[in-house]
Image 1 (spheres, helix red, strand yellow):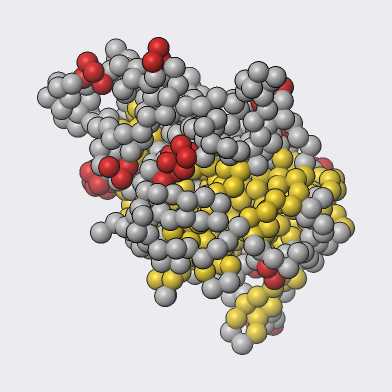
Image 2: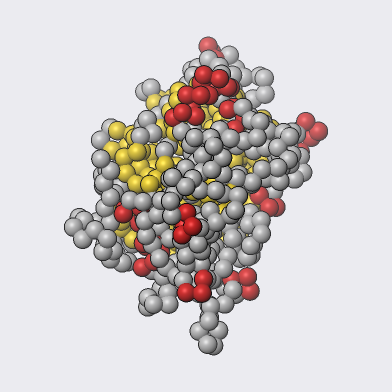
Length: 593
């Protein structure tokens, strides 16, 4: 049975569930913002994912637009300083000369740090070709030292380390070319760091730390003579694909369970697109966003254990209300209007994190949603379109539903919903859950936030709220309410779980809204809303009319990457949350009190 609990936090009181238990007090204070603020409506890829080095007190921020990592000094988090950048092509060429496998035009998409080792996921300039994981040794205030570039699958979009640091894993999305003539395999690369020669230390059966002074290329010491290296039972880099699911029976089982396989002419292995990875012990959990699925991978054997369909969210239920239109007011003007509607949300998570409570594994996902959009194939269609025909039996009120004040403006998927194959749609599938979900280690749904975030957006929205913090279902680039109601709402993008005191908290970035919601997930079956913060600004002219963000300071827009820094690693002695905002090219440090 799903439980759904909202309560008052430090910053506001929600009244959706009056009987909810009180959450322990917790607040966030903005300390400082780094980077060079640059508003980018189109192609916002200057500040995406970040990672924190506690030894050097530095933040490394992925900058795909310029093909580099930007470095922010965080010794004084109230005033982050620009401390140069990491040019991976230059470093690789300097170290390896003509043998460097990195080409000009690479796109770093993700960065992760474990001890003194930093890994960067780098896409090939030809996105359908294999990319690389690039490793550096961190040296405090000195420039990182290039170690090695390792080939992985096509379009590595995310990289992470296992908790013990033994493995680095990349989610290789394998997106097709725009004309769909080239569709590489979606995959996960598992890199055995020690197998490549990184010096590690073993003590009392526990592996820890990295002494990565060098990578040894083919001249490693004999492992029988050196007890300081991991046992080498397999290749240094193993590529996990989904080819065994190409079997017609296996594919049929996946599709019957609800896994979406629908790219033009694509096999299962081509169509499944790994988006994000979290690991716990020997297991990797990988979101397959467009496919509305989760892959569970055994790391040691490099084998996909299971692909789990994530199901659909029923928005006709009162706990799952939404506003489906950006033109639902008088004269088609914007108006907040949450309600129940006969549509189903595809969860389609982007970010995911794993945590344990009382020895049990739980997964929390940010259900952003995503539609495939290429020159050769566009998945999204508005419900009001003449080409989107509603089945008259399933929708006897189709004429009313196809009005702007109802569902006409809502973006739906044309890849699913025709359940009987007769050419019309018996079910309306829309993108994203507008929520976060908690699932167990098998991917089974334990809890979903329902309409929490859309209610939150409504209650914090101006101008009817004094010192409002957001605009209802606003976009990340415009100061106007209701602009995203027809397309995924506030759009939960990423989530990270951190321990503060004896409680576990989930920090959820709302991409379009710009805000951050905090939940107490100490009881995964009944999370509790704690607080909401937003560093967004709402400039107005002399008449009080909102001004556009393109030419005015709107604060931080488009949160993308989250890093939780525990108190023991923080320069302030208190936990921190570091957020990179892709639309404004900024990175802001928040202190958790």
